[in-house]
Length: 318
Ligand code: 5AD
Image (cartoon, rainbow, N blue to C red; front, side):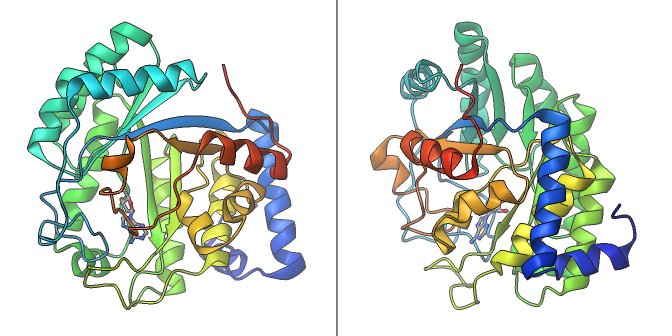
């Protein structure tokens, strides 16, 4: 069992044989609770406009070099159809935080839901609890809003926004009765091992349905472009500890893992993850969705099949 701060801290530092043992416990917890199938989401990145100004993200409002886009309703509906036709049961709508995109979501969620009766999950930034409730009523099942870091000072340095407000939005998702996804970034400037222990415990406080961690990626054109990238072992160990703490949660193996390491996403699965997200954003917009890097790793269905095979997990296509 991993319960105390000291135990979490020691597991975070596991390497070699100890790390393999941690991963093996994580896989056992996953397989016992959910089986070893690899769940798939199809993501559509609706817009790269954002009112926030996070130091690590190229979609920050002060990045005037980025061409902004928002997909139109017909495109979103048609791409959602492509996701369903590919046998993928979950349509994942992601976007920068913008009022325009908020309005698009209100129009598009009921259309997708009435047409496909599929699972719809969202990741589109901070909204008030009433807005989350409207998304839920319209057919959205879950909402992902990472707390990024449990350390308020680090959060405020990295985003210029209030940590309290972020946490209150996360509570708003729960209050709206939605499935809650949250998580953190490993490798923010000045982040300590103790901070990462706090990230693990803060997630536990929210008891999330989905939980994810990504290594920090220095993104060109952002104030953090010269900060070193996040450590892959700390990222994988965080995933494994979360898996042991939350056997029933969905834990994605994020594309940033593949970006910093060949077979990084297969490594995420071996650390206990069980979701992979396929990118369905139309090519000309996808290139502008520079969330962690201009040349970010774009996950295809073919790559998901290969990754599933490497991890010995059957890909769940319906
Ligand atoms: N490195 C790692 N993760 C990032 N995100 C945004 N930019 C970066 C980056 N440079 C993550 C944040 C955000 C999610 C949508 O993407 O955690 O919540």
